[in-house]
Image (cartoon, rainbow, N blue to C red; front, side, top):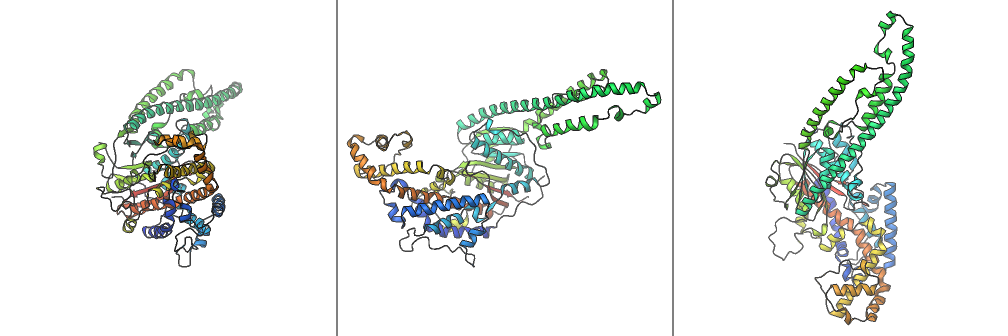
Length: 606
């Protein structure tokens, strides 16, 4: 039965639309920066067209702003400061002029930096804290005490961080809704699906469009089960060793006490012997031995009733832990035989229980109109989840949740925004597509809003990661931008369908980079002398800081575009009549996993 306690209060549709409206007001001017391609930076004179400031000034302000934002994050400064700086008494954002009204060029990088921080997910106050949600989902239940499995033994650190956090959340939602079946869309290698099945005892169907991934997931699941069993065996041996060590120490003490007790009994009268109770005969047994063993057993073995199928059995009998004088020698055989039979019966029950706690990888291409009953024959009330579902699969996951009565909850973490289909990107191009990846909500559809591929691509930029390797990133972009000018002026090509790819990492110098790139593009590199190539390099080298500053503008603007995409999805869920509760949750550490936000929703109970 589903839980009855309340989930955290989230902002209503009216409040979310108001924030969306303000965000659009800023992005209408700022989007030109995101949509400019750094490949064409020199050929299209991008800096001169869009920025009315020296690059040194831009870099200085953005670096200072990034440092302040990091310090505020560490100090956990609330959004109140940004609100007080940015909002007018009427409640509408009133930033200083960011862009020139006539030229549309960026004229105040300080105001720009303030705006991008204000319109980030965290500062808009639209995020529900992860721990708060977990606490609400658990309600009065205690946190599960499953074994502290080191996931990095089975997968890399990034994936283990993601799987552990998301599986804990999904398990909480499943318990809250009283559900045991989970559908994992875009399951890939099956890490999340396997973990949900093995650790939390859920019946999981992992659906992926790649047959190779499905077969690979089956093999990985088999290996993971093997490692899981080995982990349990190690844990069991550790537990047994600890308990037996305690038993041996206790036996030595009891032997000494036993001798003393026997001597005392010889000197006592028959009447006194008749009055001796079990507690007199074993004065410390209940308090010291049993309490210690129980404490150790609870720490190492005891699970909640939901995880009984995962409990490993004790390899030792309680009789082995008793003092040597606790039972008569002849009574050892019967309890051991009874315990053995009980263990056999428990193994049978566990085996039957495990049949319902399975992971089944399936191959199917999922769209918003997919019939789940055709894919999953025993479909029942379930949750639909997706960890880093690519492109349109993330919005389609939400659409399936909204349209299928069996889907009682959804937890989706999207990625690859550049692969989203946009309804209004090519308005004059005929298309038979009815359901698009963006936009989803009614307000953005009415606005006929379009981000553009380059802007969606920039939304994938990870501010935390780019900042660390800024120098390396800038040089590779610089090489590519200068190469584009060479191609345009020396070969007369303005647009090329081919891609250079990852030539930079394989090149020893700019000259080597250009020659390898031209060869890959199918152009005759022999017609360009070394001097001509290096002249281009020397021409643009003094302007390299322009490209660095512009790229940094794109990077700091990226979270605002991601905010737009996430708000669009959250508003869509809030618009659905059957949605009882919907929220945006920061699920992962953005340094470990840049696409860290989960969209979560639950349906109304029928």
